Length: 563
Image 1: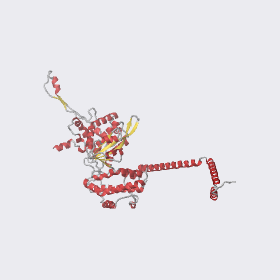
Image 2: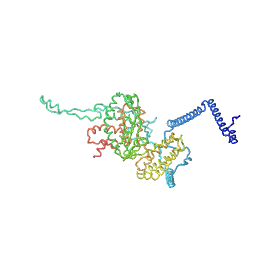
Image 3: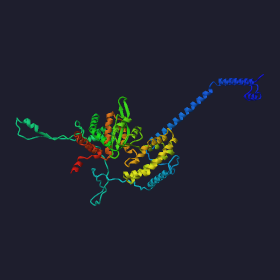
Image 4: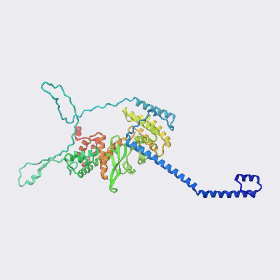
């Protein structure tokens, strides 16, 4: 009788009895059937638990990976918030250990001749920094201005009689303050009539010979607010960041109560009066060939949503003329605003890395420039995530900033500054660009270091163009400084009531910002302009640019020039 053989015995049987083919086939078929039955039994016992375990394990692994990524993201955000809110808000970078300021990265793929030029440039920059004389001066108390009114207070020592002779005196000047004063400007215009021998017949004719002095042209004819009061209200809100209700509370302490609705009407009237001057300012800025552009938020009440919505103000600054204007377009930050704002502009435009400016890369006559301060800020934020890579990037950016310090210390003109940049900064820029390309795969894809490298590399062609002209700035800090009053103001007045109020605010920030940039006394300027601008608005032959801060001349100055 044939019995069941294990696979190994079946093979031996096949070898020994290869001539008995039928027996071999029968044995193999029986072995196959028994193995199938055994497999079926095991499957019944397993009941799919192995496959379910494998699928469950895959799900657990995917869930763990997702949680690890989320934890990494939250730790990164927590680190950034701690640095933002509790650490010093300075972008100056000083390494913890000066001995670690060395390049030890692979991937700085430069040619030997390029490496020699880079080393020479770095050596010259470092040598200059070490040998630069210390020009810092010790603080000295400045004398108080002579034009201030002096109130003398004489303090005699006790026990003085005729035996004592005065040999001198010690004078100490203390600066005091008295709150601002409201006063009434009372305009009296006497009426005169020509003396004649009047009769009953010519009484009617004589009444027509009454004369009176002409009333001075007032900014707001239907109000009792003078130019100085209007100027004080506008400067208080848009330069000293005092909302109108706070200023009214200060006036009330002086015994003068003014309704808030009245002040709002004064503000609207003053805005309408200055609007033509604001548009003339915009024309002058857009006629230049080098501008800086940035945007910032301002909350504006949305009546439909019944809350303050985040809106945007755009700022355009003419670098060479030191003029700027704020632009508000229904609070939008969309690309259409930039297209309309720079529609006919020809020249250099310096911005941050906001993507809406990309369309001007291909526009004829427009040269886009980048901002190194934004790139440096991103690497500063990445220090805690990737200390080695961020330190190296900050060191290279610091080197090109030192080139700018060299040019400023030596008071170079624009041509000399451009040549210095090409000789010292440009080799460092080329090496840094190659390092960015090589280092990007090593950085965390969704981390701050990866974002910093990607941001800098994508706009590196814009960042490096500043060397083309000595007039071009290395960063956009000039226009960012122009935005600072807006950032301070919105912390005080919190929001604008509607779009019209936001447009008027943009106009006031523009005009007063130009005063600050050109070191013009804003109070004197605004009082004079509010007094004279009605005449300019009624006579189109006069150029409103004469009233702008950079060209402003008071009537006294104009009279001296004509003399």
